[in-house]
Image 1 (cartoon, rainbow, N blue to C red):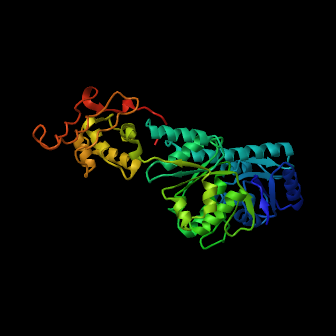
Image 2: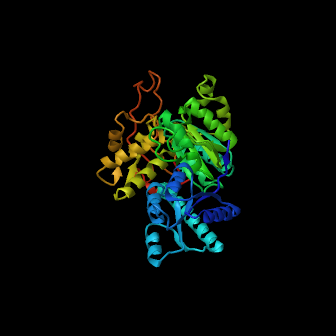
Image 3: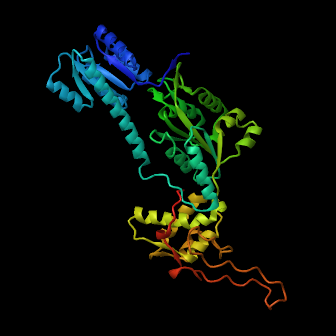
Length: 455
């Protein structure tokens, strides 16, 4: 089976065979992978079948000229950079080509030195455009983990140790605990931080499409495959691929994923060659993969490959001390994003938040805080707002743990019932009123957030 190294590919298109031959050979000596075409039709066929980074086009060709081909490439292959060349070019032609999207226009006979400089700059601009696209996708989503509890500190310490390596990481935890955030922190702290972070939700992609999503496909590989497409592994080259809900992956895809991890190469659906990829894989799941492996539902050899460094994402029940931090930060973000005046959470409202077990974890807590903010008419979220946002909330049966690094604590929990016959009564004392003691005003505001990283 043919193997293709992950190097940049240049397509040379000219109706003069000697020019195609001389240019492809010269560029190959410079370390590029090169392919040649004698006309526009052949070039479009190669573009549909192969992964091309840059096309070097002659302007004057029979049937379809270079400018028409440039227009086609822009429409069908927008990620391919284009450089035009001509021995009969004019200023008008050069201007038209650059306005149509060509990176540059070179006159024949070509100077090899100038050609190499132009190609280097064009490919550099192409890489920069890809990186900018990744940054735009992540804009406003800089990973920060909020937490000062023992569980949060332990998790942050694990992330710090694992991030600087190239080892695979398996994140396990309930839904809503911030597994993708942990993966982003691992990427951010790694030597690959300048590369792409590509998330894939394995549970959200139909079984018949997940293989194409991960490994790409060739044109005509299946119904609807109208063009060649790189997969997520190729997109994540020199970066991090995050496989969320990996426990939902079909057995057939598990086998192909195992091969990709073992060999460091992928094969597109419908393709005959493999492509080397340099990817760090971070996987996550809310399922018990060890139990699934014993039951035959998940390949044990794949589990061994993924579970090099296991990380447990603690539930919110395991780190209740972080509820004030997360709630206050969520409220501050809500006010900023919705052009609202700064708001604060009363001690009574915070007690209500603390009384809930949050089966949806941090995600659920954030939803509840936003709901409270919408219901609040003033600048302080009240206990009533909190109860409306948590319809099942009853009078708090537990007090909110003291927030790490804070001098504030809410009202204490009611004492245990007295034995019958002592002190008359024998029942529970009524719970103390909200906001009974604490710092002035009995409120917890966003100005008191202690950042230890995000959620």
